[in-house]
Amino acid sequence: MAGTAQIGVTGLAVMGRNLARNFARHGYAVAVHNRTASRTRDLVEQFGHEGTFVPAETAEEFVAALERPRRLVVMVKAGAPTDAVIDEFAPLLEPGDMIIDGGNAHFADTRRREAALRERGLHFVGTGISGGEEGALNGPSIMPGGSEESYASLGPMLETISAKADDGSPCCTHIGADGAGHFVKMVHNGIEYADMQLIAEAYDLLRQGAGYDPARIAEVFRDWNAGRLDSYLIEITAEVLAHIDAATGQPFVDVVLDQAEQKGTGRWTVQIALDLGVPVNGIAEAVFARSLSGHAGQRAVGRGLAGPAPVALPADEAALFADQVEQALYASKVVSYTQGFHQLQAAGEEYDWTLDLGAIAGIWRGGCIIRAAFLDRITAAYAKDPALPSLLADEQFAAELGAAQNGWRTVVATAARLGIPAPGFATALAYYDALRAPRLPAALTQGQRDFFGAHTYHRVDRDGVFHTDWSGDRAETQQS
Ligand code: NBP
Image 1 (cartoon, rainbow, N blue to C red):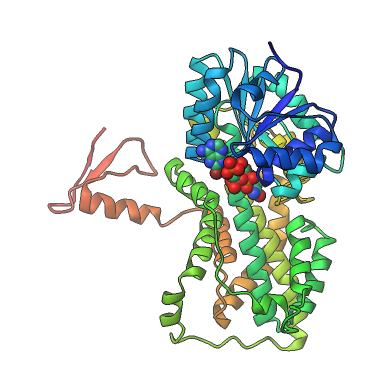
Image 2 (image 1 turned 180 degrees about the vertical axis):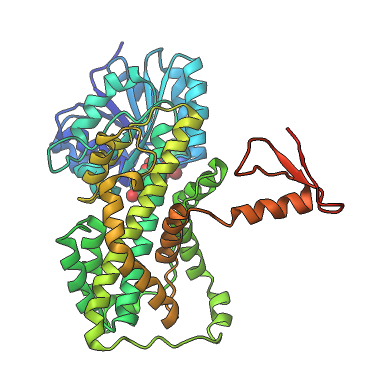
């Protein structure tokens, strides 16, 4: 006999517990279950008053507590634990039931799991959830993949518990079939890496280039947050920079070890971009910058290498420089989003997903780490032209980057002159200039490839595939 709980959550660590509470607070009856039953009891004891929870100790009890078709959310550690939970529950489910994986799964695993469960008549809904534990409780950005049919049943509930953008729309939309939701969440995280790296570079340039102290830089970030850079990450940057370490009385940022860590989704974004042949230079530089920061041994031996010791600009130039850093930050941010959306476009073609890129930008406006006023502009650009080949093809973005580019160039040049590493700003500018270039040196690369490997080339003046006899008389022959 089917039960009455509209949704169930298994895996009640920080994310699952908060997600279950979010459902309950919105009036849904929620079955709750965890491998270690004490977590289930704790949840009901501490938060039972927030709504209707149906605790279950065993998998059978949990499944029996759910109304049909069953909606079973899995919030366990990604990887083998997710497979173990699916293997445990799938035999207890009936055709039409849904397993929703809200963990940080790799999209290829999601595609594999979806195909296997579809064979058994079950829906598998790989769902990206962004916003950390706070988002899970109060409204995350939710990126569900899977079938249209599953979204028809599940979507309204997810939309109800999701964050809401400033215009009131839910930060949740059906992304596309099988692994599309987890893919989009992964690219979201890659963009987040790039955003964070660019902000870190802006801070470093203001500190070493403009000669500002952290408190002053916090003010600069507060000002920027009132303009086109208005975003959660800029807002928290100001807070972190203004924070004073209680133990030493020093700026907090000066007492933290300068070695950034990563969990892996940024790395996946870059690995998959390489497979898809999409240049996501900004995201890659962000992943590499974190990685470089962590190689303490390499840094120790490199510290004595020749180069300028950064000397701050004269005070009268510093204010202008700070404005130019804002321009470089904004322009580089637009470039990282351009690259991330290119990756989504390419993945849509590769995996046969119909991705609504404007809607994806729309659901990142609330709940998640990269939430920003600027995302409205991306939605508007795709609304104007759903087939927009690149964000830089949008007139407004192109005009803004055109207006920012002089300042951006000055910042990259100043960083190089002062010896301050700014890989994110520099790679974004190189990408922009490469796209603008009427001709690229790739022609020479093709010539070299033909020389050493007979890899052939195309010509600009006629169709066909050509090869030059480099070891003989250098005559050209048409291959096809
Ligand atoms: P964890 O990723 O720390 O996972 C702990 C949960 O997994 C516990 O409920 C644990 O049960 C369960 N579990 C494990 Br481990 N192995 C299991 C197995 N073989 N069978 C059944 N259950 C098993 O929890 P979390 O930090 O709440 O994250 C949950 C998911 O959400 C992860 O995939 C994570 O990547 C993703 N996520 C996290 C965040 C975040 O900010 N933390 C944000 C977005 C997404 P036990 O209690 O019996 O040990």
